[in-house]
Length: 185
Image (cartoon, rainbow, N blue to C red):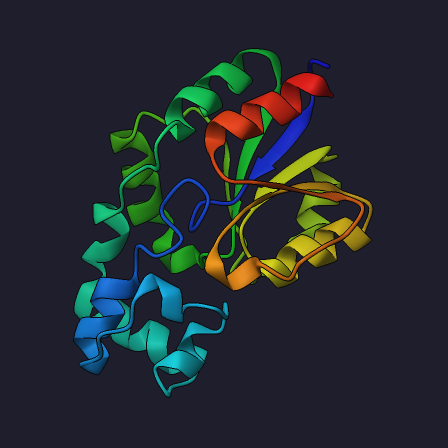
């Protein structure tokens, strides 16, 4: 099916789900590994609040956003999907990260895709506004909320979303699988 409206999260989908781990380990003097990240509530893993963790990350490692690498296959699949569909990046990042996010997207040659920074992880209203047919996501709570709201979700498999299941959620391990799922729709 062509001309789908596809929303794509950035952190944990286009970038590695564990990209921020080394920065957080440095801030909190910890040695957590990917296997330790069995919850999406990373602040709890480091004994902090979300606000405290983000404040420390932004104060010490704002550069972490611009240093993120695109995961294997993501750029190629996004470019291919863009030819026949309407894509939008929909992220929980706040407006104060707009410039660094736009610069990163430009550097990755992905700035042609519209960007929406919500400042919240509640994405259902924006997805409905964009008439989203498919949402590519990694966050378990976001995926369930979108799925329960009637949106098909392609969930990137990672340690912190293993127990998420819903009839509107399709679990994949890589971007090549995402392309295959979308091609079948």
